[in-house]
Length: 64
Image (cartoon, rainbow, N blue to C red; front, side):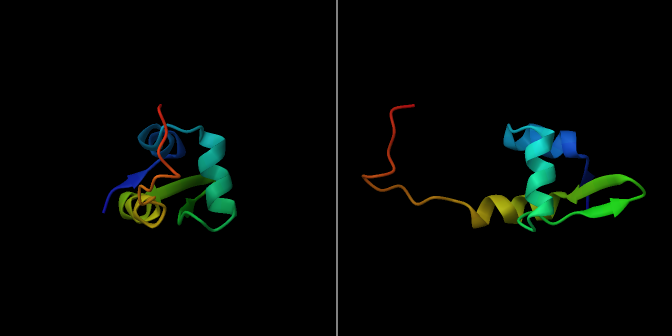
């Protein structure tokens, strides 16, 4: 198992470190605390992504 810093997890999801912190605080993303540092297991990040996948439908399609 590999552990990621907030910065590494944020880079993988293309979000800010604060977003990662908020996800952890809300219990949406699992993490451990090592001293004063948060660490996110790569499997926890993968589980988060899998649980938030959106099934494409006509109403969710965008022109991004």
